[in-house]
Image 1 (cartoon, helix red, strand yellow):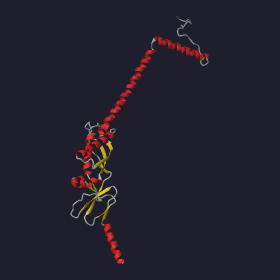
Image 2 (cartoon, one colour; image 1 turned 60 degrees about the vertical axis):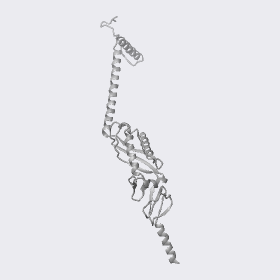
Image 3 (cartoon, helix red, strand yellow; image 1 turned 45 degrees about the vertical axis):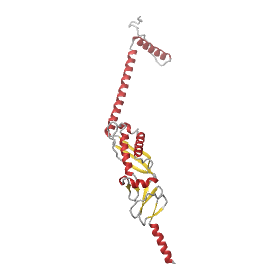
Image 4 (cartoon, one colour; image 1 turned 90 degrees about the horizontal axis):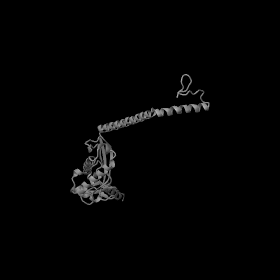
Length: 264
């Protein structure tokens, strides 16, 4: 009896060890002993034996394509110093079999764990081409603040390419994100110098305005009528100060002669 149980346990163990479970966010395809890929997708949660043939697994949710250090040119023919882009896409699970069996294997990549990312290289190419076209619509110094517009343009161009190949229902673009934009150093330096020169011009213009206003004021005050008014105002101020006991002095009229008489 014990021998029978052990044999049964060994049989179950061998079957279990010879199975692959399709995880959430994946689909699978069976490859038979004859190396032919079956078109029926294997759904998440299913266990599939691999004692005979094999099972390929394909992640289908939120696959991220990262493009780093792309060097697109702007509308003013300046090459960006840095441009990093991420495109996130998903696979329609029902299209996995068709994509794997009918599209070039060069369009896909397989990682060390054995998972195949369908159309990864294809999306990478579309995203790179779209990035070059999108950035070319804006001047270098505007590209940083045009991040949203560039993302929208990349998304639109990629979608147009998918529609052209009738793949818009098989490959779904879920997000486009420009992670980094840095104009060429020479462009930044030129822009900074232009801003500094403009600030210097504003400062000089202000100085000229102040000097002109001061000259006009001095010219106004130097008129004879204004001088008489200022002299009378000064004498009035002194007189008021004497009345208040703040000044001990004698006011001498400005037109008094040396003999004590007051001139006309």
